[in-house]
Length: 149
Image (tube, rainbow, N blue to C red):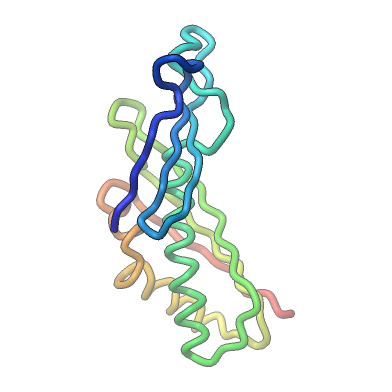
């Protein structure tokens, strides 16, 4: 897996902390830092997500992918899956994630709560590389609800 990240604020251009990432699969995405009122030249312009927001989003995408795949393989009529993530970070550098909660909302027809619980556990214990890596520094908790459609 590869990715190239380029700073968009080099010599001869406006300052800032914007970056463009190109993934190995050929997709691009923008990242930016938070504005810094005290030192504007060191802050971002709030034009794109922060890098750590993307890390959190990546973990959510990774585990949601697993949960949907596991439920579909179990022949459950899953129609939707949403994961709302909330995270806390350490107060000092490196400001790693220390706590992450993932709340899953799974919609479908007669999807058993036990199947959703099992799919989430399998993702976090075996399949989701992102949440397993983040679990090295953060306490990860999960919750879920199943809604009938």
